[in-house]
Image 1 (cartoon, one colour):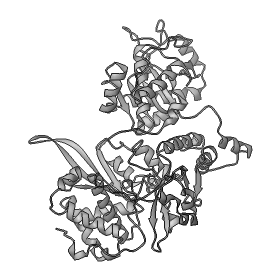
Image 2: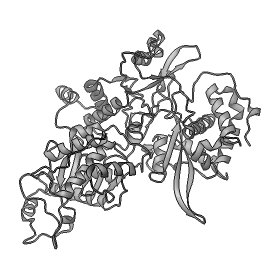
Image 3: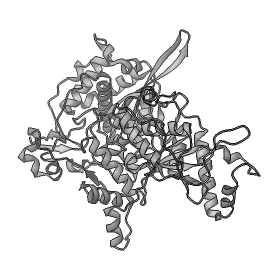
Length: 589
């Protein structure tokens, strides 16, 4: 989700967002995510033979004890166990994808084994299966099942160590009463994988020994002729064993009803020192981190005059504008997003954000395989996206579409801010024109000759508000989006889902609203403390939450939470600026 629901400090732009449960893929590139929660909680192990689900028990099969135990289970417990087995079998049988080549190469060198057979599952089915087991990630033989679209390197190396463990022998586990063996997060296997995950992520040598005992009870059987192999499922639990301060406070108050948003907010504030801002309809929660040597712009006395500015006073979290000339594709996508954002506002569609992305898919042609690039553009609202689809109808390609947007905005050009005018001029001259050095814009430039894809209307009206970059990633072919940028900085949820560990992204605050967390399986009252912990871990690794410095029309310094995922300066400043580029000077050919 995008850091944008919050512009009431500047005149009131609050925004909803939907989540990630159905998102198909994250952006390609380094994934140094921030789910340290998984590591601190440890991986519980669930031992279950997938093939045994189809196995009919009988004399000599070695499963007699388990059959007896199942026979005395309650109907409810049996049904829950069956549902879990079906979910697990479904996800491991769905194909999945191979490891990221970077992760695979590093893990194979560290663990001394081939990992080309490992399959990673992170689609909606995988996330449901993870939720069934209350897991952020789990390993079933050579299948790694993720509870979200992507996780950090350390988590992947942790799970890959479970692949190594399970390939060598039995793992620890105790029966949970429904025929499923669950290990303790502190058992030797989990401690080893947690340590090895950290070591490999840091470039150090892992411990390749195997803990000696798999615990009491029947051992895990290895595959043999005529028998079913019992595979092990090792998971990262989503709920800590302790009770947080926020839970204790709620209990002390008599268990009064609270919303999920309130529960998460209280956990962030009470347990981790976050700060609230705004009312019930536009609530945001912030983690400004005080600095011993804050930059000069962050200690101006004028910042103390407004609540949010004062909140960030004296921190490293107030960002100034910076150049993106070294990041040409993303820079071009920012121009596209800005002019599209203005076009939709001229139509009174009132989008609260626009994002643009480029995808690349290899396709076979007459001359062999070649990359096909496509431009994706989206707002966070179905109505605004329909306006974009209507405009594209009948256009030959993305270049014609963007030319039409620029032409439609000409009458209002003089009312644009200096930055908005600059983006329009650069889009016209550097991308739509013909000039030296255009090749620097790479895939974006190539996508202009192809079609424009605008994400379709949401099937569930409750998810209208899904943030634009999430819509783009969801609608593009899995793993194909190479760059994405727009008019807003990513909020904490979007940062965690799409940009974990990306040092070029500076997350904004957290929106606790339901719309802002749609698709998060841990957005529940029971799991609110765990989600809060995950959010806090991500924010700390990201340097806290961030705002941007701007000067209003009266020359007063203030901060804003908007600002794009590829920009620290707003694409929608309310103040007016002298026109930099007369409309007649813009080359729209």
